Structures are given as structure tokens and as C-alpha cells.
Length: 202
Image (cartoon, rainbow, N blue to C red):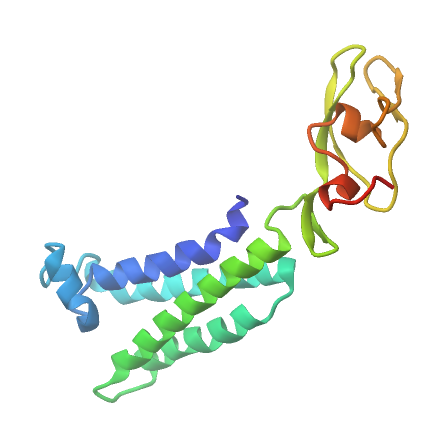
């Protein structure tokens, strides 16, 4: 999977791991940390809260990158207030319960990350994928010339079937095999978008 689709997961996992391994700063996780043998240690020392806040920023940034692909605002609408809860609790809340804001922000980012994962699955999570008629199709296909064996990755059109294809190596004009609708169905590693969506080809 593409790196940008994992940034939010890395950030959210990182902030939970930081909290889990620093029970002095996050007493809610003290029992789990003790069970794992970390006791009252603070793994990152004086850097704990800075690392925690950095992971929050990484998580929100990853959710924003995903939003630019699937255009679903809901994960971001949960993530941004959750991130603000963390920064408010740490920098501006002087009460004895300031860490409750951190917990609320953490679990909000966890929910946003799960939500974002589902949206990526629904809308496709690769640069060469596209949703057509509610189905995610792969547009990149590696076509192999049957004459010389030359291979090349091409992006398949979504509005027409490609009946002719010129091999850039031997210059042979390829045509579909009998029963196939396009050169990608005959010589490509991926069938054309129409076939992927379950329709008759073009």
C-alpha cells in the first residue's frame, strides 16, 4: 500500500505506544504498562510529551492526505477537534484533569483512523485505482508484445476500449485476440475497466 495511506496509522499507533510506554504521564495506561513489565518507567524521558504531540500531528497529516484522495470529510472532522483537545489539555488547561483531554483526543484520533481506513477501502487506496460505478478498478496494466516480448506499463482509458496498440520496441501493431474486446484484455496483466466492473467490454 502506498506510504501516504499509512501515515495516519503510523501516527495513531505512535501516540498510543508513547502513552503505553510512559505510564507516569498517562496513568490510564499504567496497569497495562505494569503488566508488560514497564512499571513506572518513562521510556522517552523529558521528550515524552513532545513525541506524543508530534505523533498527533503525524496522524492528522495522514488523515488530510487521505482526504485529498477519497474526499470524505468525516474522519477529518473527528481528527481535527481530537488533535486540538490534546494541545488544549497540555498547553492551556491548568486543572487537575488536564490529561482527560489527552485521552479524549487519543481515542478520537483512533476512531478517525478506523473511519479513514474504511473510506480508503471503499474508494480505493492506490494512485492507479479509480472508482467506477461503485467498484474500485485498477487502471495500470503491463502489456507484453507477443511478437518481441517487450513489456510496458500503461494506463488504460476509462471512456473507450483500446483496439490497437503499437509496440514501442518492434513497432508491431497489436490487435485483440478473438473474443477479447481490447489489447489489454489480450496482452495485459490487468483486464480493462469494463471487464473489472462486470460489464460487457465497451
